[in-house]
Image (cartoon, rainbow, N blue to C red; front, side, top):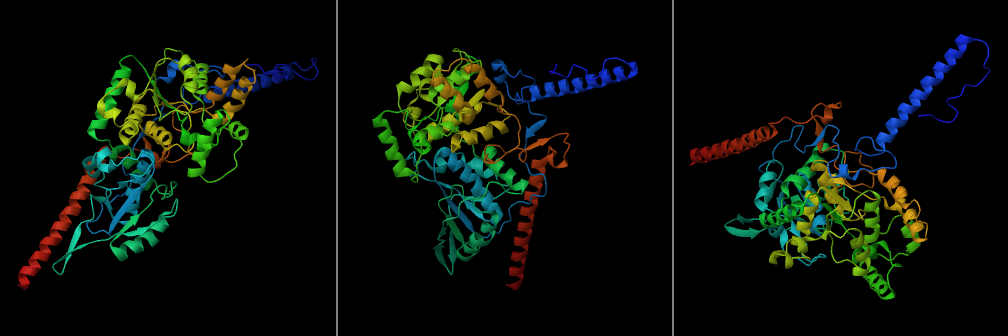
Length: 520
């Protein structure tokens, strides 16, 4: 690679042959270094896909998982992790509010809070008064037995607070209700919450969405969150069966991509993106915003320019076309009711006619009756997790997209396409103003700078649930000892610790009984 000016010698041409050779040699070395750096840079900006030219994306390569860099998922303890003691400080009840994925994060936090306080966790309650108006509860969505068994090395879990007997009378423990502060530090749980638990025997934390800080300077605590999220929280068999059936039907015809098309009323109202809609539709959005979100002056053009508006279905299609995906691409859509209807979907469908959702792939009665319920959301989650490529169109405050990005990273660095809305905004605005020349090249340049699902450093505001690297990943031959994978027999070690704890309890009980018999 030649840079202007670097191939030309400066100074006098005559005299000093040795000096001239030296100058030529020095310049050659400089040019070689620059070329090497340039090649390295062009390989790096393509994310984790090896060397890609700055104006080229190989869509075929994206159907495969991203390069791992020698990392693999691992959430097992890597230091001393004693089993939960038989005697705990009391019972912890929590009410997880919000939709399915906000509740999922809250469950992870509840398990960690119980471990921190040495508490017995009561099976988390799922808010029936959330967006879905679904009262399935934990038992209706998740495999309870698997949840309890998977976390037996971490916390004690019961389905309800048991009654106690004192002086021949049965007494029910009433949990003391507390509203935890948002993103509460560990110190709040070990002081305020623990004190109330010891006073009352049980506490009830409600609401419990985002009530424990995400960034915690304790890798073992973070790995516990991953054990809950990616191992313990397994959907019930009927949901898993439905999901696998849909994936099998989609994959029978080759690769497929899933897209979380977040072009829905609640998100549009939250973002304040009204101007592209009719006056009647704008009134609906403004009314929803007034009823559900804090009052704030939002200017559409300003919001759009800084990437705060969800991509329209057409914009999603244009990005994919710019990346090299053609109209034969099969796409699974995970979304609620699209706001604006067919007027917004038609341009997308014209670009990509092979669109599916869970109802079109599987018209079973169970899905038909739960399309807007937690079961439908759970099926969408699993199909998106197992798809070859996943693309969120609005991953800001979207718990569904953020959790899936983290789960797919943990699941083996599965490809994700994350449009940089802020960088794409001026390109789309120019196109709308008639400047269509060079649109695809400009869009490709933006997308080449994004991460396609490989390991990368977590930078705020990226959530731990979106990217649990490096805490929940390890290397067989690491440069940093802290990144070394735990031994293959780690579960056997934890089992022995648990058995040792149980043996100690039995020995103590036997000793107590022997003493009582002697006294008698």
